[in-house]
Image 1 (cartoon, rainbow over the protein chains, first blue to last red):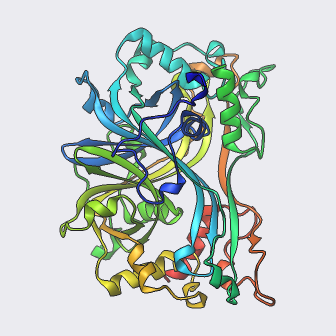
Image 2 (spheres, each protein chain N blue to C red):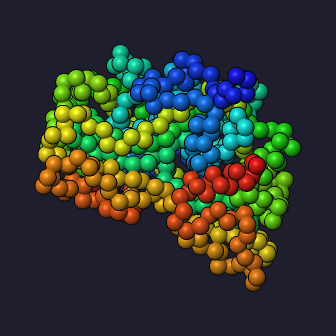
Image 3 (cartoon, chains in turn brown, purple):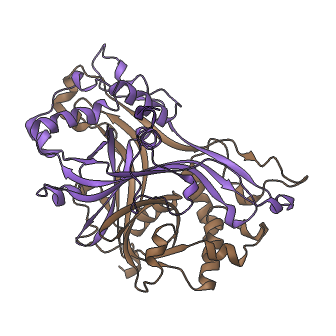
Length: 239
Length: 239
């Protein structure tokens, strides 16, 4: 069997090995990346003076690199060439699971934790490209039709990049799972699906005459799953 | 004016002060707690051997204390009386904002970051009460009708508690906000609402005859916002 038949995976180390419920863990690129590419919001953890921070931010993936919108992390990263250890996590909540005992109450979910060293994107060309993809990864080719960014705007936006050194996915998708003997009990049990959906688009009320919604937003249709629109746009932005 | 007229707030320190876009920041209990009580999923950051972790988990609030389902944090916390510094964050994504330039692309959101020291709940009575509320905070009085937890189950579930020492809320709710001169450009701009909703409940297909859905789940109706059901249940669980 040629090497190429082995699906690429992230290395498993003490840092990213799924310890609790390890039957739910996965490390292959395909599983991890699909969870990432189905989201636009992540939470990033980093440490300043021993204090952990958990910051929500916009992010996207490019190969095995993650980019995100810098916030208070930027100050810490400014003068660090090697980067700071960070952990970027994405979680999709898929259902609530009400079982026949407290212990089996649960939720279906998909999450990915990515570990690496975060650094600020400072090279001006790298940064311009990243700022383009910060829009175009979600709305393919949208930047070309926008008012172009000023030097001041480029300066005011911080972009952080991190190579995924280790990662793990954790998926629970089994719904109700009571203990065998508990099914004989007169207790009501159910699963409730949870989805994150798009609403009806609200066009700006100051649009110029004749200006219409373009192909860049075509994935974003009312009542569609946000994650479907994000995956479809991703596939178009990174064919 | 009596002291009671001053709404309670979390202290503002260099740790929790909102640095970027500080006009979006708030520190009062009401704002922070509402964001927390509208969620069941949070992300917790903590540090092990200098490595930050960002872990998704179920959580709930009781006054100015947060409880969450322990995972790999438990091992670290087991023998630490004073607790470990941690940061628990909740984020609600409310819309996507497509503006006339890249810089003004944004999202409406509500987030709360809470800082404190996490410790494992080890006292058996405190732990039993917490495990009851881990279910009943979401599904009021449900535990009373369930098969009761075994000693082994109680032992196998880790619960972490953290007093909120500092907290901040950050809210963006203004939708489209282009630069004044950009409204004259022939660029399409819109806001798309994003909501997280409940689906149609899927009752267990092994329910005993006559066993029906109870009052504990009444807040969870099809197509309702998850956050509304969570707030309503919270108000009933902690009247």
